[in-house]
Length: 229
Ligand SMILES: Nc1ncnc2c1ncn2[C@@H]1O[C@H](COP(=O)(O)OP(=O)(O)OP(=O)(O)O)[C@@H](O)[C@H]1O
Image (tube, rainbow, N blue to C red; front, side):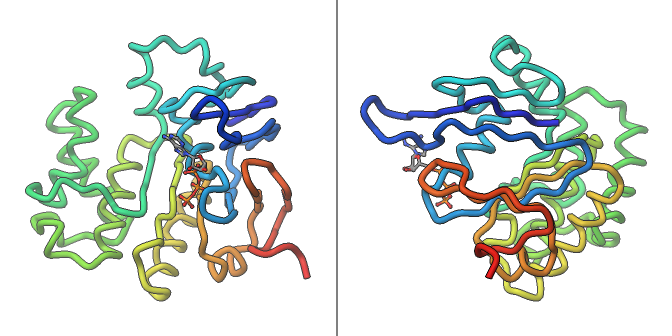
């Protein structure tokens, strides 16, 4: 689903690499936590998969494609096949819950009847039935993140990337979001989630990949946040 081959990323000439010779693979259906201190390269990793950035050296493959070979005009098409969720939700403040999710289908030209059935199904999947007409500011943080997850999932991507999705949420709400992501993963969606949240990582017991100053220092199946004690 994702493969990094000796991937390095240097943002500014002379700066130390944000990622340094990363070799790793994520198989279809996996759930992977990317952990590491602030600045260790987690967001850079995710941005390379979305082709928001390009590696300085090495190759990134996603969804079976060598991303260096994807032409610029095909990048939006690639991104539409990868769901993305962020710490700050990134909802449109003046659009309802329904409209925020529908937008992901409208931009790819899905017909109205498809939108009218798929959006409510997806909102039900994330536990937001009955809240279709609310505006984002009328929702709790956890509910706003569920809208963002619904928007990311509405066209059924094979891969979901999440950058600190629980970063703005309290522990109880975070657990609800993790249950939802776990459920999405069990239906076959591959998930890579960058996080600082040690309690969540320790509870979920999924694969843990740790970065330190751009270097991959650990790759552990059923891992914990800190190195095994
Ligand atoms: N656009 C950019 N231009 C220059 N340097 C950057 C850019 N983006 C990130 N960096 C640098 O690259 C390194 C890795 O940053 P990155 O955002 O990938 O880390 P992170 O692990 O996601 O951190 P955080 O947990 O704080 O989000 C840092 O030293 C950062 O300052």
